[in-house]
Image 1 (cartoon, rainbow, N blue to C red):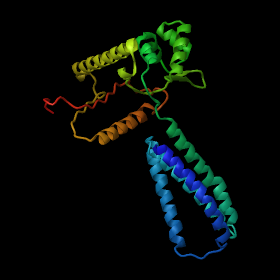
Image 2 (image 1 turned 60 degrees about the vertical axis):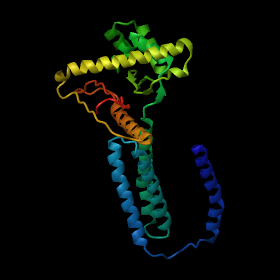
Image 3 (image 1 turned 135 degrees about the vertical axis):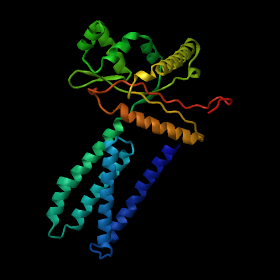
Image 4 (image 1 turned 120 degrees about the horizontal axis):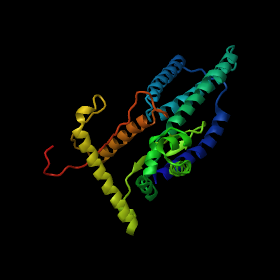
Amino acid sequence: MIRRMLLTLLAGAAVLLVPWTVYLAHTLPDRYDTGQWRTAWVGFDVALLLCFAAGAWLGLRRRRAAVPLLSATAAMLCCDAWFDVMLGWTSSERWASVALAAFVEIPVAALLALAARRLLSTAMPKRSVTLRDIAMREDPRFQRVTRELPAGPEEIARRTGLARAEVTECLKTLEDTGFVRKDRKGSWLSIPQDLREPRPDDYDGADRERVTAFLDAKYANEVALLSWAAEHRDEFGPWSTAQRTSTRLTEEEFRALEAEYRELITRYCRRRRRPAADEKELSVRFYAFPPPEAATV
């Protein structure tokens, strides 16, 4: 509904701007003396400077908020180029304005637009776990293959002891479901996904029982993992942390908290494509739920 209203508004604005543009083309003078000329341009450049600084800060941290800011900065650079060239066309600095627009402002605007697109494309795909995903989780071969990534099929087969045909089959299935992709050198890379829990109510019969059993096993494994972590908490050194708190939120605030967490974890999951020398695999969990009424918080 909101999307349709937005599209209607944009289409209406485009239609209304046609006669308005024609009217301005016939009524505006070629020359016009105005006040606050210096303030207008200095203010515009200050705003452009702040957009550059904020965009660089957010972009280096791969924040999603950098996308609209980088796009706005690119648009401002295009506007700057347009008015520099048009308003200086009859002056002696005309060709300097043209060169600045052609070799600096427009190329930088294009780079910023591409950077915004790249940040936008690095978001993890969101979808619910399917029966096919459950089948892959039940097959230990897929876990063995993904643990060896990034690598080529021959290397994976050698490390896991699986046949080359089995590795190729696993990689093809993982590629079809969006978990891996092949780079230009022929090596396979993992692709993080934002997987949501399936709803048993969306299935019938044996499929519903299978999804329910999957969720039961998943949470049983989570409890066992947490118990193991508690028993070995003194062995992790600096490689572990734990936070616990309680708060009161509206549902809207709770959804905002969840969205911020997902943005944060997405940023770190997509931080680099290949392993670093000093990195470790970490299990990261986020649970938020209403506690039992009798529980002491």
